[in-house]
Amino acid sequence: MNLHNLLSKQILKLGKLFRNIKIQYRLLLLFFILSLIPLLITSIFSYKSSSDAIKEKINTYSVQAMDQVGENIQRDIQRLENDSVDIEFSDIVQHILLNYNNMSLWQISKTQYDMKEMLAKKFSYLHDVSDVLLYTNNKDKIIAYGDYNFEFKLKKNFLDTYISELYKSAGRPIWTPISKGDEEYQVNFATEDAVLNKGNGVLIGRAVKSLNSGDIIGYLIIRINERYFSSIYKNLDIGQGGHIFIINSKGTVVSSSKSDIEVSKPYKNNALLTSVIENQKQENRSFDFKMDNHRFLVAFAPIEGTDWYVVSTIPYSYLNSESKKIGINILLLSLACLVLAVILSYVFSRSISMPLKKLIISMNEAKKGNLSISIKDDSKDEIGEVTQNFNIMLDKVKQLMDDVKYKERQKRDAELKALQAQINPHFLSNALNTVKWLAGLQNADNIESIITSLINLLHANMGKGNTLISIREELEYIEDYVNLQEYRYFNKFKVNYEIEERILNYKIPKFTLQPIVENSLIHGIGPMEGQGIVVIKGFMYDNTIKITVTDNGVGIPEDKLANILTREGNNDKSSFSGIGIFNVNERIKMYFGEEYGLDIQSVENLFTTVEITIPIVM
Image (cartoon, rainbow, N blue to C red):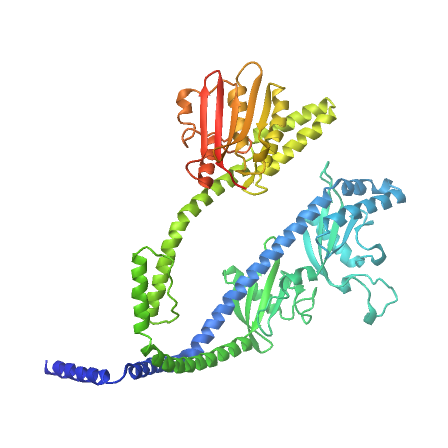
């Protein structure tokens, strides 16, 4: 107890001593002590912690980078395999392989020209596809695509082996790398130092099967420049001395970012592939590997659908050098922070009262309802944090108020876009059947009209254009829609337009009139007997725009009329645009306010009138 009292007295004395020192010096001493202790601890442990962190980060980055490269390569491989299937089953390839022995030289030349023209369009996006060759079962070569003056020639032994593999694969694609040693020289007398051929590349080949019998009728070989794959990762920076390359299950390098790793040759260390396969079995994606008396961090990713691996090797000398740099930087940064802390302690002693005063004044303003105020204070102390949190709180309150309307509008827009994307297959089928019927009667004059109307409506329905359009454009959509429906209903109805010219350039939400007119035709005029009439009127009234749609159809029962503008009472999604009457009413209110929208009047077996009220908007 006496010891406790003694300590309490000493603390009080020390407190009184500090109270006699100016606050600037107290803060200076406090900041110096608090900064010095972390500085010493950081200096001691910085090297080890930074070394581990950098290795882990680079390891993670390398694995993720290899995964991404692998996915990109796999996607390109899949695209090329799909292209090879398209070529295999094209009519022109099937024809020439089935009839090659019975074709004249002129016919073969003409077919080659047609194939080259077809493949030039297919590979217009892919300049690294240099050649496409076809071989008959007798190994007669047909150049389907490529430079005839710089012909791609494989050596006989390589070609025989490759075609044998394609035959055994029974139609599955076979990928294999090639180098200049696998090709015939373009100039037979060229020396080894002046070889002229296509150079490094990758082949995709497959046996071509007959569409009718399923028998193998020939072989397809596509040559892709090696740079097509290396360009995917050659600009990827994994550190000084790092290499990225692709290797297959035979240990052959398929592609490389560096010239010192030869393509189409076995990798310089066979143990690397063995380690890759073993780690893949253990579901490890990276490992340490010693090669040429140097340690490397190896990361890899298998390429789905092939026996390829994309591999990166990063020397530990680079990792250690980065750790040392980070350690030095941490020390320098800590010293800088110490100096900065001393300076700030002097400045903060004079800046405590002013931020508090500003904060109190701003809080009083906020209490009065002024949410637009903001306190400029970049300090990092407790007062600064309170000030910043106060600013954030005001911003969030204001943002929440704005978000209520914004999110509701977003929700409506999302519903509209989703509904617009749901093109009704029944409507599309009816329209296209009408086109088919007209074509059967050879009435070509009507076909252009109905197709034009259909295309215009489909473009509008798929969301092209702005949310608000002119009344003129909306009426054009109605005319296109009515044009289609006139053929469907065989002149069962007429549509009359009585629109004031002065309102045509004012704005209206897209697809406001079309669902209403469609509702009149389907539910009003469709079930009735005799001629139907739809009258669309538009005029200015009392600083608003009124548009009415009236039909002489069967009308709407009173019980349904009472609920038609509610969500429960309007679930019809079978229209062309997928937008119901309820949705039209809600969109108008959302855009312009509760005083605008739809009003529906109807008498059964007599008429139905839908009145639209919108503001005047340019």
